[in-house]
Length: 225
Image 1 (cartoon, helix red, strand yellow):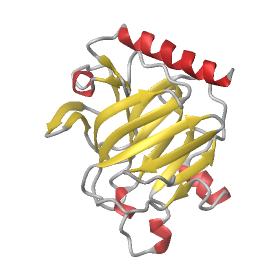
Image 2: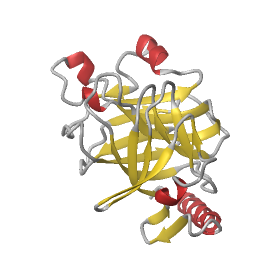
Image 3: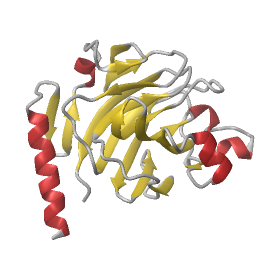
């Protein structure tokens, strides 16, 4: 029964996404929103300006740097559980690179997210190094609250360590109640957490943090296997 439900979820997601063509394409690997087309939509970004990005095999979107968190929601891409894969690039500048993905969004302030701090990837400080990837559930469970109340439970180091100034690949598996994060070709998860909330929202978006820009490409969403 469980296998049937997963299949139907994936079929429903794909059918919905096909309505948005050419903004979304369906492939054997899942559904792939056209991020360069999304960047041309003035209504998609929240507290950011978005521009198309084409750089070799990386075709996607660039979000600029501003105070406060920023988002670009994906229209017509409902998401409750599944696998989110994408390439992302930040930079090795202290406190100016927070890049990731938001899911289960209810509005611009209420969502869960997984994000990275590339400036901590290669830090010589062992405390900072453990703060490389983070789970949050806004607005209640901010990174500050989670770090104070549950030290090192909702964040972790990334190994093998990516180049903080280069593209790296992310796979986020959302299979309630657990979220698992994989980086590059690692077969072991970098972070495994149990969700802190039961969201009703189904919005999915690309996320950047305070004073942070970010590059995103090659986004694919597919059902959990």
